[in-house]
Length: 296
Ligand code: NAP
Image (spheres, rainbow, N blue to C red):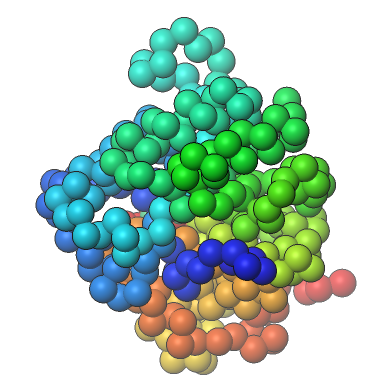
């Protein structure tokens, strides 16, 4: 992920939507083992997913086979506080990157997942009230206690990344950001440039725009689908999902795509996409279709 940083799988399984998959604990374990057998060893979580339920659902599956924990890398996140019946007394959704809340959140994640440590802990969102010195000291404590191995951020601007990094003893190992052909923000605001500069690999969330690329009725999504289909035929891919994953991987910062589907056939298809590479013109045809204009 970064110089001397952890090694993750080429694709990552996201568990944000696990509460919608309607699986029994045994079926969740089967799904996990299926993607594990195919080399997808890294899983992405957050404390808040499913109103604080998704880590628990995953943990229930892990408990059924204790040997699985050592074969996977767990990424999870903290610092968003949802309005939730589970935490009465909160009056507004907000961010909290205080040492107290980070400690509290990590302890809860460990207990819900039923594991001894988290491989990578991310600050989920930039927090205007984040005190970088305070975060640095709690990160050090968590590492010393063996609760967290590595740290990273999510949705941070380059300046926010640099601020936090300037106070830490160890390098941030990723910035997890939205990357898909409907959203060019991070390729234009310096985020991906910074990660390329530092040789830190982004984790890419919502590569398929949460499904909007397939079913969006807006003109941008419609234009994009036409071009994705043309390129699918050109490169001999099986579906446009594979073209999109190849498009995401084409960034020189080498993003690792997080898959959001709970269907194993879609995961298999995404794995096959690793065999497809887009040339420069194919990549820019997708850019052009999405923007509805040629590059300046
Ligand atoms: P995504 O892959 O863009 O979207 C997944 C959704 O698209 C699922 O509902 C899936 O439905 C649907 N889908 C996939 N292939 C499809 C197809 N061929 N046709 C129609 N629908 C299709 O990813 P995401 O779930 O939005 O995000 C992935 C992961 O990123 C999450 O699990 C989470 O771990 C992480 N994330 C992080 C942040 C952050 O702020 N850091 C934010 C959002 C997400 P099926 O399940 O039916 O296949």
